[in-house]
Image (cartoon, rainbow, N blue to C red; front, side, top):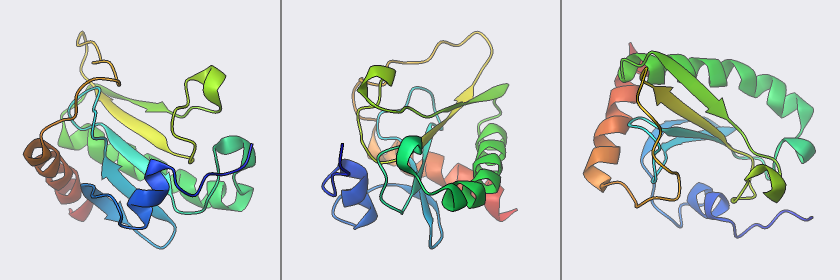
Length: 140
């Protein structure tokens, strides 16, 4: 299948849809997930257009790995999590619903189940506060 330049993440990357930014560099945007499965659920979105890992540029993926680790550590610390789940889906059969490569960073608290990802949108003020928590850790 072809890359759809009108997917929601492409629109966020172009500034057509607002988001709560945690981090940005020339290759990547990191934002809060609008429908978090736990407080602090963060999305890492490479700017290069690809549907998922199956068609992503290997060199970009190699450059992305250290940032994935950095964001995971920051989210874990910012939300005093016991662990962090990193999720990435490839094609509909795997559960992928937005066809732009992205990674979910989900802080986990022992014994606390995740909320469904198809739930309601989180309050914008909560997302803004959560983004600030992660930015503070990244700046330290």
